[in-house]
Image (cartoon, rainbow, N blue to C red):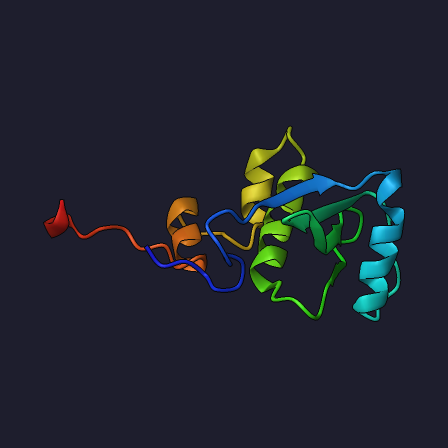
Length: 125
C-alpha cells in the first residue's frame, strides 16, 4: 500500500476533522491570516493534524483556508469530502449523487485513485 507523503509523517499521526466551536475563533483567525484570506463564515469544519489546526472549510460557502507552511493538499480534499457529506440534503440522496464531483465513479474505486491505495493483485492472494 502506498501512503501519501502529504499527511503521514509517522505511524502515530492523528488527523481529526470536527466542527469548530466558539473556542476555536482565534485558531480560525490565525489560519485565515496565515493564508492571507478573510475569515471563514460559520459553521466551519476544522482539520487538526496531531492537535494543530492545519486547514478549515466554511460549511456555508465552501471557502478554504490552510496553513501555507505545511503540506495540506490531502487534508483539504478530505475536508471537502466531509463538508459535502455534512451539507447534503438527507432527504435527497439521489440529488447529491447527481451533483457530486464523483459522478459516474464507484466511490471506493475513486477514493483508491485519489489516495493512491493499491489493492493486492489477485495472484498475491
